Length: 362
Length: 258
Image (cartoon, rainbow over all chains, first blue to last red):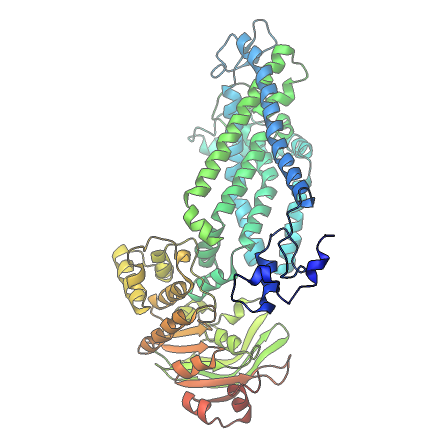
């Protein structure tokens, strides 16, 4: 700011050029010049009321930073576009070579000649395991989050919250191995029991039991539990105390208070948390590659060994794949991408539907 | 509809900190009683112990006895939610439920009481909104979010929500401190009307307000920071503001301290 010192000499005296058009007393002009001036000029640097306003600098930290953030934002788009181009370029030849219907064929033989593969069973397995996992995880996660924020004594709440965050740090391969080598036993027993008493429900069909959708979903449920729990805990903590007190003062019990004030307020956040959990469940690879039976059939029998997901199939089959095989796996990756996209769009739509209310809440 | 509140040796703590000590005070039915005093003197704490909202905070507890028409609300087998239904509360900042519409806000308390029938809810909502002088302003947009109203309207909405459950007593914790003068006037007018039906206790920092709206005034004060708040003087408002019997009260209302 080398050119400014001569102006600061006028500070407080009121330069005529600034005040001439105003009726304010001279002393006020110093403040006027600072606040109504160029917002990029730091306030309080001694620029007085005298003289014209300093010019905006052609290049400065402000512009450099703006350029950096713009580049960062653009990079995301470039990367996404590059990935899309790569995926499509690799997938199309394999899809052309496929001699069966990609959507309906239940099998995966892209390395054969002629290649035969279909995404139907994989997409079905992906969605089914993810939904089952959420079905188990969401109520438990919300229960834990509500307990941590509104019922637990502070010390227990902090400790338990820490343990749950730790759960999120366990690598998925560990969950996979644990599921395959340990949980499979209890699940087999549970499957037998469920089949014995509830076989009239079609999803509890006949064996063999073990590496089933049920096992995969439960492992998945444990894996998404920490994400949903810690996000919804943050959401619940943000509920304004004033609203909680309003509910209590109306004579609400603790549970009624949660239902009246906390849950509705946290609804968009809960949906976001569930969707993030769903995103993780849809994309989870190694844990499901280890726990599912790797079959290519569409079946609602969640007890029977079998099941597969897109991501697990990619992990299991990539090593052995030839060119067409890789293309086929990449094509399946594109379908997974599309499923995730649809899930996210749906989530946004749900969140925005009552925007009028949620925005005024913010 | 209105009941007498009798506090005997009420002492309230936040953990180890004693916030108020040995408050003795009787609030007559169908009157407006103002609690005034410097910040931190425990008037809000006392107000919150009248409907057992004080104990909501972790570590907070109340000793002594508080009776509403001779029924001790701190009795072991009294249902705390029943106490709060009987003694409504309006808070310092308007706090309508942000996810609810105007209508849902007003009937929130009724719904908590298990009332589901639409016609009853609608009738009660109109009645409460009329009593809160808000009906004409909102009758065409009952389905809109309560948080979209102006601050003064929100506070009247909160009053409507409070009186919709037909409590015996209405507690107001600085209900106008976040409002502009016109909204404040609207709420003060409302208090005049409401005291026909309810016993009203109001905490206020605004002494003109206390003088305008209340029949009786209680002056709370503390010796120094960290000491518990005590009731210094309790008398008819007119007496407190024209000829207080305690020097400290006089100093406070004439602006010489606090």
